[in-house]
Length: 174
Image 1: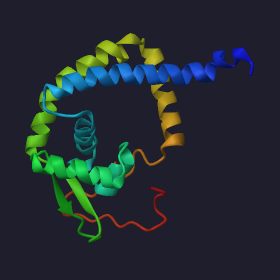
Image 2 (image 1 turned 180 degrees about the vertical axis):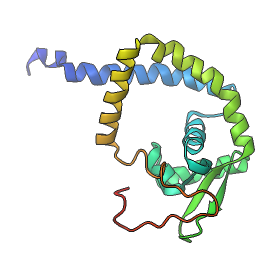
Image 3 (image 1 turned 135 degrees about the horizontal axis):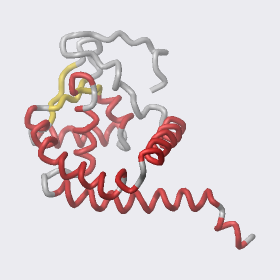
């Protein structure tokens, strides 16, 4: 084996990405724990709040997170028990349901968000000048769309409460 193979910039790029993720995750976990949230609960609340009507179909929520469908069900069960989200039946498909943020979930997110944003500024976005941040965001979206094409599933076509979105089986790969 060529000893210089480990100097390959591809290995360096992935290694740096993992190191950054680990460092940020540790800081985020400590801050979110102060508000009684795990990182996955914060992600679920954020994904739902950023979606039309503060809701997503359970399958779309699974596609947008790092969780399996059964993993999302377990997290939603726990968060529903804690009053942070609720389920709502999908009026057009009895097999589907929506996860919806409750007022209590919105309050918890509002309480944790200032500290979370400060950590992001201090340890991530604030480390880059505007041009570098813009380039990083473009690059991350490009990579995300390639490796996780369903990451935005349901975020733009979720029906507001009381309305129906008709989907055909071929309307989305997700």
